[in-house]
Length: 417
Ligand code: CTP
Image (cartoon, rainbow, N blue to C red; front, side, top):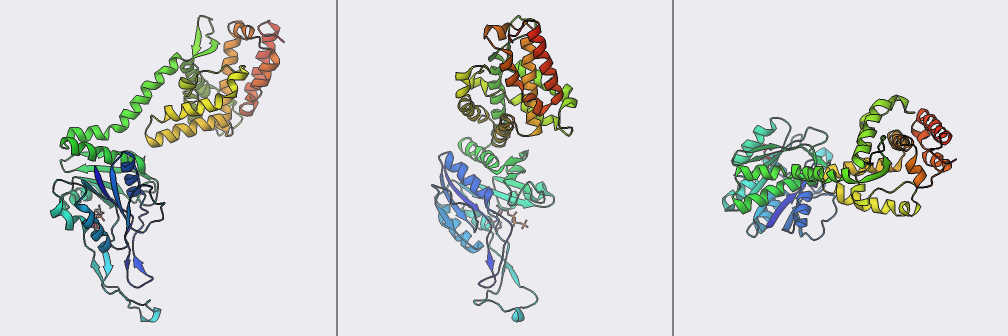
């Protein structure tokens, strides 16, 4: 498809140095342009003054005022299939524009303004079979106001956002929007990155164009997010088949990674009182232990005393994290990546405690079935002590407990001294 996208504010000058404008950064419009480009669409971007990097591979028509934006959009309208008006066009401009900088002592105490041309309204008669998408930045009655604009401007879709919220609207990287369509659908999306909002808008435009844009299609477009989450949820079922070297306590079979992660989550809830840091964020510890081994679906379980395997472990796990967390919607991919990276870096109090649990649990599993796994790999007590020493960084209590378990294992002959 051929997209014509506007972005950023416009500036309405009153003299060569002063102008009326608004807080738009252009991030939303640029995100739509980049997402459309990445999907292989042709894109023309009409941009007001912004300080964003030029989007590679996209022709940009730079404009300053609403009148210039109207002219640029009008010129490129003929050859587009969809117009996305993400720009925050200034609604008013000074009637008088001074050619010279106005002096302080000459300035009138009031400024006479006139409306700028409404770009969507002006181009409405030329819409034809094109898809028109508008934006509504509101501070009250968001949906009602957006619905009014959708009808008045003859749009197919309007993207409404409440710009009074700090995490949504102007100059931030996230947006919480409601999508309203001409066929009466209303879909309230959660807080998303602007890129993710852009993807949802494009899902809708693409499907609407190819199949008539009925309500059912619209809902399918909005559920693109759930599809990604569901794919990930299905994918992590494989963790149940990644076997560890530890046996269940009854020795009947090897434990799998999903069971191990669940065990750590329960331990985190029960043992938090033993963490060195009393103000620990327990929810974060639980998220870390649930996520920490997912990369092993691709990278496999590397036995902790396997020196060769541990050499390229980091690289293998990085690639795995990219693929697996990459199945998720944008901001959840980033969230899972950062939880996993935090666990691996073992720098925060939460990561240190999570790592302590991750060490103590296998100790129990080695001790339980009389140390058969230690024995079969020829592991000695010095190695076990060395490997578990960092338990103390997360919990001194658990480290003392671990030391006593290791001593006991040696005494019982489960572990070679
Ligand atoms: N728009 C436009 N031309 C204008 C002003 C706005 O084409 N002169 C477009 C915007 O790009 C956006 C939509 O119309 O897609 C709604 O813009 P908004 O500023 O929210 O609405 P207005 O029509 O200006 O109404 P109001 O200022 O009363 O909220």
